[in-house]
Structure formats: C-alpha cells, structure tokens
Image (cartoon, rainbow, N blue to C red):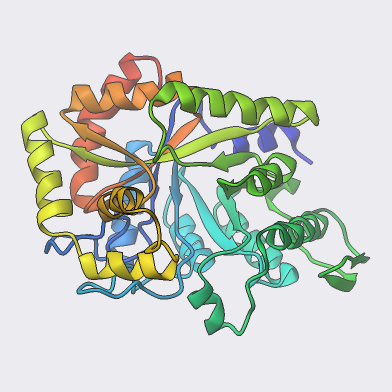
Length: 372
C-alpha cells in the first residue's frame, strides 16, 4: 500500500485549506426547486462541460445525489438523474485533477458488485474516486426496488456490515464474510483500488447513529448547517465529531453544503435569489417532498420554516452576495473548522466562471486556497 498516496486521497490531492466542491449536478434542477428557464438541465453534456470547467479552475470535488425518481411538481424536480458510479467514471475519464464521488445506497447495491464498480472508476481516475455511502433514503424510491426500509438503527447496522465487506474486498482475496445481513463465500476481486489505497469515504448523517457510523468508518462526515443559529454552534459540533473520532484512534474531516448566489453587488444577488426561490419556486414539488417525508404534520411555524428553505434543497446555508461578501462567508466556514463546502447554484455552468474568477482569488488572499 502507498501510504503517502492514501493521505493525498483524503486531502483530495491538494493543499487547499478550504475544499470547495459542487453538489447535486447529476440531477435536473440540481439543488434549486425553481421554475426559472435557466435552471440546471442535468444533461450529460452540461455535466461534462461543468466538470471540465471545475477541473481547470481548481475546484476540489464533485458530489452527486443518489436519486432514483423525482419529486413531481411543474418541473418534476430531480426527475432526470444520472446513476452516480457510471456518472463518476465518465467524468473521471474526462478530467485530470478533480475528485469525483459516487453516492451509493448500501441497501440497494450488493457489496461485491459495488466494490468492483468503484475500483473500475478509481482506476479510470488514477485514484480520484471517492465514495459517499448512504444507509437509507426515501421510502418511495426503495419501493421501486422491492426493498423494505429498515428501522433507523437497523440501517446503520446493515451499513456497518456493508462497508466492512467492501473494505475487505478492496484489501483481501479468497475469504468468506459471515454477518447478520451479508453472507459472502470465496470472495475474490482484482484489481484492488488504485495503488493499493482505499478511496476517500464520506457519509452524510445528522442522527447520533449516523454520526457514529461515520466516525467509525469514514474519512469525512457531510453535515448540514441548516438550522444552526450561528457558526459558533457549527464549530462546537465539528469539535465534538473530531473528539469522538480521536477517542477511538481515528481522524475525520467535516464538510457541509451551501447554496451560493454571487453577483457583482449584494442587491443583484438578493434580487436574483428572490426571483428564483420566492417568485418562481416549484411549490408543487416542495409539497410533494413534505408529504413524502411526513412533514405536513409538523407545527405550523416549523413547517413554514422548512417550506421556505426548501427551494434551495432544504439543506444548507445561504451564501449570497458580492464576491467580497461570499468570500467572507465561506471563510467563516473554515473558521468553524469545517474542511470543505459542497456548493450548489441555480445553473452551475453559467455561474461557476464568475465565482471562480472573483471568489477564489479572494479566498487565496485569505490563505484558504492555493494561488492559481
């Protein structure tokens, strides 16, 4: 095993203190539930153009959403999506530096098949593949597969076996794996991951069980600041996660997500955001999501807070303003000891060039990104 290369993987192959990625580009509309004409298409050609643009600009990673059907409404929000392992393989073949994650629902992917698919993508990208493992999700999607959703604790018990099995497949040959959920006989899988090193593994979790899973098995926890009253509370949360990992002899990074609207002036940014997510929100899709999640029974004030946040995909912090303001807001994430931020935009490819030209140099001057 090339230990030095393994450390480079976790650092996403660069020295940027604040990692920046793009979240949800494999889905139509991305993470913005809007009806505006310029909303993200999610087409392959647009994904390829975006990935190459991001790669050239020095963006660190692309993180997809594992989605199997849309939420309805006028736009059928996230109704057209690419499966993430094949999506990642295609993008890795067409880029040079950027890390591309696959998002895998452990209950839906047999570990032997998934491990082989991920190794294939990893070799295509010469070690730039990352795994975002998901232990459970929308009931309606699982019904498409004839798979029953386990209870919350059971999802992570299964996930624990699944990731242990994948790790074993990546490291060993000719072994049996006997668990409560998984029974594998005479497992052999070659090649192993690129240069014999484990891909970076991430998990998105909010619950205690989910966070415990991430701390045990993952290099990074992907969390949300949606209801954080201030970034001091986020910093406390990050310290708690890292301390819990240290207690069992592990290290873990913490990432979050943010919806970004950057324009030459604060007024322009505010007006565009209002146009997209207030005047042109796809409320039919939002109501479909709320019903799917059983949230319509929430107290009125809490329900309204969720409803108003959902045009930007429910999760995440709003980073809105001119380049100086956006850079300061992103710097505040770093000050809270977050390793990175996965960004979403109304139209990634249209908005990324301005963000990279104006915000990245400001972050470099703050010591958070390498120049160039």
